[in-house]
Length: 417
Ligand code: FAD
Image (cartoon, rainbow, N blue to C red; front, side, top):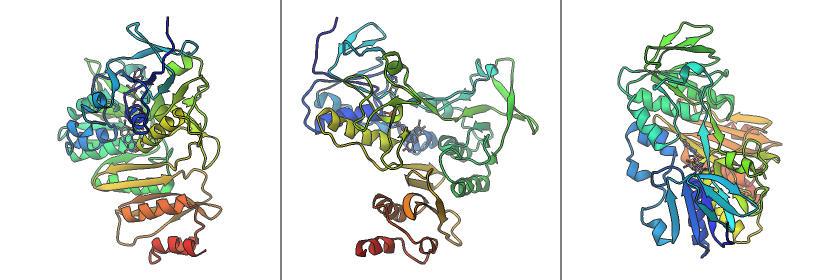
């Protein structure tokens, strides 16, 4: 039995959940707030797991999302190691896996996503096949990063490439196996893929695109000893890292009757189809103000931005959600920064930088307006690109492709139009 409550319950103590609770307090909400997280660790930021934490350049103590005393200070009831098993949408109550029930007025589903695994049955008992999503995954992976170890990284997405860079730096003989014709195919353009393929190969990583995995040979313990390929000799490995993307944790919302389709479908106020139930972060699929349709973003800035937006929505603000997406990735000494969504571009312009083979600037235009940019090694130009994308600036393609024309001048031109 549940009693009506003014409590706001957040399911998931990751980036979006914690930041939503913090944003509610910042915006002056005095409602009781409970965060329920199934992990036992204090809430932490995930991006460093495949970067500084993995390379040893950062400490676990540095990645806490908030100081330990933050939650008590803000009157936020943080319950860790507590998994929500069911949402009773009609009764506005969540049920935990130990049977406890907590009533809510508003529920924020911030359950994130999980790493996808290959379906091969021979991998089931293997202890040397890894994915990376949590602190424990990183600590486990670190144990395999030894000089001379041999790794197959399956999937050339951002996480696979970041792990390849960390593994290679640790002295691991690293092979990336990407099924598509280029790395990062799902998320960016050919010039960006070619840039990172070149960088990784130059560092000494074996990058194989169009790779066809036929299966895995396991040893007497059930661990993977070799990767079998359709069109190339098998090669021996000490461990396999599977980086083939993530699936949103929609099961709770789906069982409760919410509309779900590769994410929990929400409106421009981040409300799901269930009354009083919102969804944010990796798990939410929301209207795309830039290009229409629905989109689901797996990025830290999206998690933070939606957290702030859901707090405003719950407190009655009717402004629709419309943030410009941005993202970053660190590999070796390089930082890629991306803004906007490039998929609908009709023109791609690569700004040449002769003699600077670790710098890249790729711009995406639609009907001559800048809609997205991928920038490596030029943070100042990234900041300018962001402004140009935000203001949907019409750009001259020839001038954009001329490195002697400073990006700043496009802003100046725009302001005089
Ligand atoms: P999460 O941070 O995943 O939090 C969801 C939480 O909910 C988890 O703790 C989960 O265990 C918990 N949960 C799930 N189900 C339940 C339940 N039933 N009951 C209770 N709790 C539950 N983004 C970038 O922009 N740049 C990067 O460089 C970058 N690097 C990344 C590197 C790695 C290795 C990973 C894994 C992600 C990276 N990301 C990066 C993505 C970014 O971290 C995510 O987009 C962000 O964490 C999403 O936040 P979230 O709150 O939606 O989900």
